[in-house]
Structures are given as structure tokens and as C-alpha cells.
Length: 271
Image 1 (cartoon, rainbow, N blue to C red):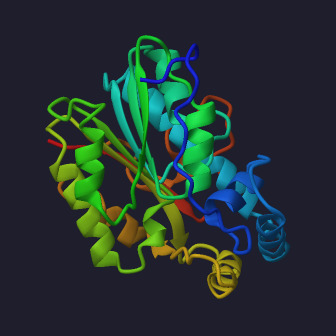
Image 2 (tube, helix red, strand yellow):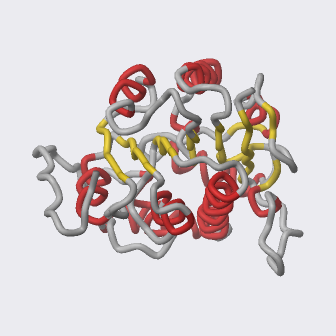
Image 3 (cartoon, one colour):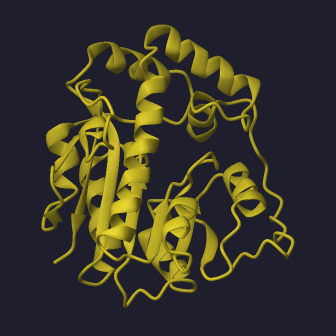
């Protein structure tokens, strides 16, 4: 448990490569954050020069996650969250949204970037009633993730698995589906899966920008069709309205929802 009265645990020294753009830092830049390097800003600016709409996608993705968590806490009664590929801390992080509604919520963040882990430990303080923990692990190692998460979460109780803009880093679709299946197999009935990712077949300019980014030397992020994203929820009970553009998933009153953006997501319950 992380407590604001205690100092963050030291992070083991790991080399942070500032010569290659990193998706978490670029995403942070698009969200208006400061935890990035010139190489990330340059890559982000090159991307937005081709496709300015990426900033809307980044911010709409964050808003979708916030609404997911609010639903999970307030309507589904979930108090445990496993956030894999969390990215750099910004505003409205998973534990902040969850613990604002339920102070006893427990959250485990997972990432394999040393900069992400360092900032998470330094900035993401839990409420006194709840807990936060940080795991250094890769999304491609679901068994390690589940074993480490069990040190903070009671995985015999319903838990929400969050995979926000992370599965695109797994190039092979069958492997990505296998990872989701293995993680959900480790969670009990009544657990939930939240997924959102960039979608192919919606905006050709977005696809052009993403292809250029993938060829830049950065870690590639692979867009998937809406149908492919929907397969991550196979065997689960989708919460209405299903897999839709993130702007159209249970929008807050007064929010514009007419824009169809190339970022789709959904939320589903394990029966």
C-alpha cells in the first residue's frame, strides 16, 4: 500500500533510453504532460503534422477510461483494478477515479518502462483505505502479471482488467487474444475486461501517420479493425453499447458524440 506519509520506494536503476521515441512518453506529450524528451516531442510533432486528430484520440481515450472506471465502481461494484500498460501518470489516473468514488479500491499498475515505473512510484499515492502497487512486467508475460498482482489484489474476488492502448504493441493478433484470455482466466466470474485501441479501416490519414511512426524506429503500435478489437471480448458479456468509438461509449450528458474517431473500445463482464 502506498501512503502519502511515507516516501516512495526507490526504483532499481534501469537505463532510460532518451535517443528513441517511446509511445508512453509521446502519449504523455499529446495529453499535455511534461514527462517526455525532445525525441518524443519531435516524434509527436511529426505525427500531428500528418494527423492532428491524434490529440483528440489520446484525450478521448483517457475520457473513455475514466467513464469505464466510474461505471465499474458505481454500477458494477468493482473494488479491484489491474491496469496493464498504464503509461505515464497524467490527470485522472485509474486509482484517482476509483478511490474518489470508493476509497477502499485497490489498484495494481503494470508497465515495463523504467520511466513509467519511476514516476508511478513517485506520484501515484493511494488513499489510506485502499492500496496501489506497481509491477515491472511486460504484457506478453500474463503469468508473471497475475502472480505479482496477487500480492496486492485478492484474485478470488471480481477484478477489472484494463488494457488501454497496449494490445496494439502485440503485433500478432492471435497472440494478443491469447494474452487477454490468459489474464481473464486468472480472474473470477464477475470480473470485467476494459479494452480500447486504435482502429484500422476508419480514417486513412490516421493509418498513414501510424505507418510512418512504426517505420521511424520507435516501438511499433499496430492498428486493428473494429472486428478484431471485438474478438478480445469473445466469451464475455458486453456492457451496452458494446464495442464503439470511445466517444460514443456512455458519454457524459452534454458531451459531443457525433464524431466517429479511429479509437474503439468496450467493457465486458466475465460470466
